[in-house]
Amino acid sequence: MTLDLASTEDAEPQLAALTDLSRRVRDLIDAVALTDVPEGELAAAAAEVAALTERLNAVRRDSPRSFEIGPDGAPRNLGNAVTGSANPHALPLVAEVTPERTVRAELSFRPAHEGPPGTVHGGVSAMILDHLLGHATAVAGFPGMTGTLTLRYRRRVPYGEPLVATAEYVRSEGRKHWSEGRIALPDGTVLVEASGLFIAPSWWSGQGPGPESAGEAG
Ligand SMILES: CCCCC/C=C\C/C=C\C/C=C\C/C=C\CCCC(=O)SCCNC(=O)CCNC(=O)[C@H](O)C(C)(C)COP(=O)(O)OP(=O)(O)OC[C@H]1O[C@@H](n2cnc3c(N)ncnc32)[C@H](O)[C@@H]1OP(=O)(O)O
View 1 (cartoon, helix red, strand yellow):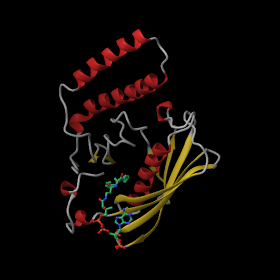
View 2 (tube, rainbow, N blue to C red):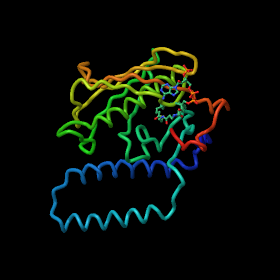
View 3 (cartoon, protein in one colour):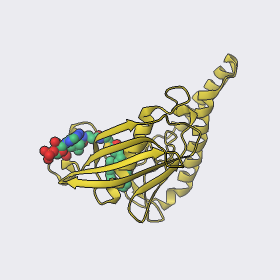
C-alpha cells in the first residue's frame, strides 16, 4: 500500500480535468447499460471508446491515486472505488462527519448498479456500507481494515432515488473495533443494515508480515 501524502497543488488543474472526465465516464457507463440503439451504432460507439482508451493509456500510472492531503489540508482519496471523484467506478460517495462523530452521506445509486430487476445489487450496497463503517471507525480514532462485514437486507434498495447512509463507531477490544451503519430512505425507513469489524493490521506496527507477502489489500 502506497500512502503518498505530499501536497499536490501543482497537479490540481490535471486532477480537476480528471474529475470531470470521470463524471462523464459515469454517464457513459449508464448510457451503455441503458442504450437500445441499433447494432451499427453500438459498433461505432465501441470503436470510439477503444480509441479513447488508447489515448488515455498514452501516459499510465501504476495504480490509482491513493490517500493524500489536498491543498485545503483535508485528506482525500481520489482513486478510491467508493469516494474517489477521479475514479469512474465510484458513486462518488461524499461523507460528512457529524459533531457526534457519526458519518453521514446522501447518495443515489445509478442504473449501472442493478442486480435484481429495478434493484441495486446487494454487493454494491455492501461496498458502500463497508466504506462508511470503516470511515466511522477511523474518525473514532481507530483506522483499520475490514475483518468481517455482516449485512441484513431488509428491503430492496432502489436506484435513481435519494437515500441516506449513516454509520457510527460502537466499541473496541484491543486492535479490533466495531461500527454499525445503514442505508435508509429519507424518511428513515431502513433498507440495509450492517455491522463491521475493523482491525488495525499487525503489520501497521511492524508486528507481522506486510501486504507485500500476502497480496496487497485496501
Ligand atoms: C483501509 C485503509 C485505511 C487507512 C485509514 C487512513 C485514514 C482513514 C481516513 C478515512 C478512511 C475512511 C474510510 C476507509 C476505511 C475503510 C473502508 C474500506 C476497508 C476495506 O475495504 S479493507 C479491504 C478488505 N479487507 C482486507 O483486505 C483485510 C485482509 N486481511 C488482513 O489484512 C488481515 O487478516 C487483518 C488485518 C484483518 C488481520 O490480520 P492481523 O495479522 O493484523 O491480525 P491477527 O491475525 O493477529 O488477529 C488479531 C485478532 O483479530 C482476529 N481476526 C483477524 N482477522 C479477523 C477477521 N477477518 N474476522 C474476525 N476476526 C479476525 C483474530 O482472531 C485476533 O483476535 P484475538 O486477538 O481475539 O485472538
